[in-house]
Image: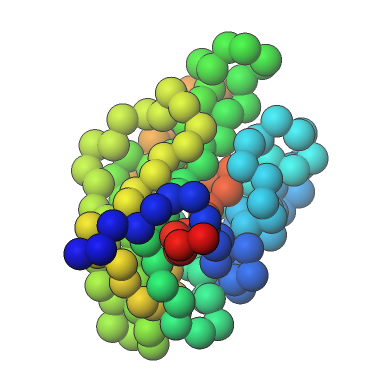
Length: 173
């Protein structure tokens, strides 16, 4: 395949319509914050997206992006939430899913798995990039959280959270 430089890029998530299995709204959380261009969770009123909190360890959550038409996709970037007091990243990525899949579709019916992670380590950094082996074309992108982590800072409740999600197409300048 052709090598694509990573200099120029388009983030298709910025203009996507977003749906989720559940969404915590308020206190810095909103479905609209997952694709607002803010990659960190430093501002207390604009943290990111969170599913609803639950004590059910078997709970699964998903978030889905409608790009409104088929777009080229080269990479998916997931940004972890960090609710730690400044400079101590003890709470980094506590609600980043441990097992997850990233799927694409052109019709919301037939899905193709493009990323599959089992036992993904709790993040120690903000950015998690999943470059695809081959450029794909798709309208819908979905992240399925199949195993969530218990948050010891929140009564061991389970939830899936991202500060931001980017759906990247690299292009030649």
